[in-house]
Length: 280
Image 1 (cartoon, rainbow, N blue to C red):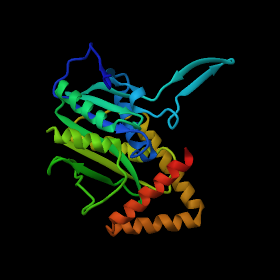
Image 2: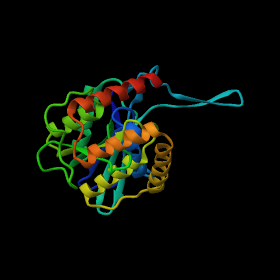
Image 3: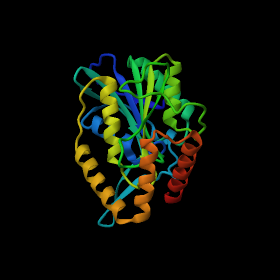
Image 4: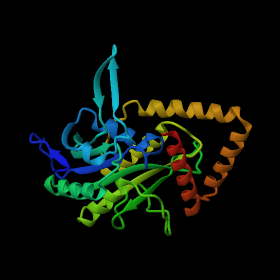
């Protein structure tokens, strides 16, 4: 059974770029998927993947809607590829729930789609928890399939070897790169002490995509959400002396360019994964 269904009625596209993000890991604060939700709004579905082959429904249960005591409908987890055009750029937005199963088949199918749709570039978006303060610009870590692909002042890093639990997104980025498609990733670092959606990181990821593609993109409510979030975080920090002291220490580390080491990043990632497991 094929893993995906390609729409027969596809819009004309010229050298499209895929922008990809999945929820969960690596999507701290829903920063990456928030960006793709905005970019894909109103876009035509070009391909959809078979959820029965990708998801464990006991770990990611579909949502049941009950109306007046009658089982009305179910919403299933999904992965879709949608088309959007901004300026002279054709974008294909690959997003949805991170698949549980068949990662190898997903990678093979994605490479096949890349070839069939004449895709010329790949951008992964993600967000990871880190020891960074909300009061400073959101740091962006980059990945690239070959040197010189990243733009907007983002560099590949961190330096050295970093071993972390993988995401399906990373496997897809590697697969398309091995197929000869220039591939990059932009990953925002979010304060590990902030829970819930983190619009400040989403806004910075949107700017990273704009700089990479040299195109203006829609913001939706993102700018206002980021402003309101900053106000709330500032107020909460000011109200608690311990939190204020901790944020000030993080600020001094950033101001002195003492970025977290690889081991520190791993510790924050492991803590984030424990928190995610505890909440499921």
